[in-house]
Figure (cartoon, helix red, strand yellow):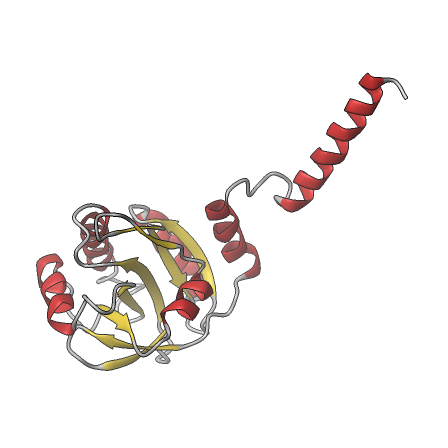
Length: 200
């Protein structure tokens, strides 16, 4: 076989494999793949016990027929998690009115449960205006963290400065416990649209 023809055949075969593995080149990164999966597959997420900033026990997603928006944080983060708190406050303000009033719960979930005690979470909540009933800060109970991160497709990597590198996103969960959208943390308009769909 001519070398050019052989090279072309290898390229075509590789392209076909890549096309299939990336949903037609729609998901070229792991982050894009998990966001696409939420939109197309709407996977069910198990309910995990979490402890809130007030020391109360809550299942996440809550079993109260509300839609839920979950973000993953750690309260000692000096950069992106502080920005995430500000964006959640913006979202909380937007959801105070119809058609969302009383139908959505916001949860800032710590993946650093050892350091993020209820007191530390409450301080983060006070700083950003988390009110408790609509928006709370929480941490997973027991040994649920690995399974919880896996269910939401979140990657957390410790850095060398005592912090973490992690996905920063808004995760929209429908009242029946399905992950229906993953959005940039500042995509408030997109979150509203995703919540409208989830609450239909």
